[in-house]
Length: 112
Picture (cartoon, rainbow, N blue to C red):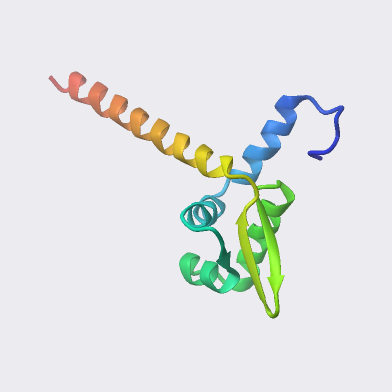
């Protein structure tokens, strides 16, 4: 659990990355990174998931403190729990871009 002060930091980090370890959860976080908040209806439309599957992914994201929710009448809205989540996704995107460039460069050099 995140609030257990006796857990080593590397275990807490591993839990964070477990929360990120699914393409749909990454997509949800990307959608939320691009706007202040999104309703469940908007997330359903964006991910094309069934409501039960989206609910499961949102539950994992909430449990790992990556998103927070707010009910307004019959609608539930989600937003990133911390703006650094968007920063983390941006860093990952840049890292992956560099890794792809490096791989492409190595393959080009090998084919000469």
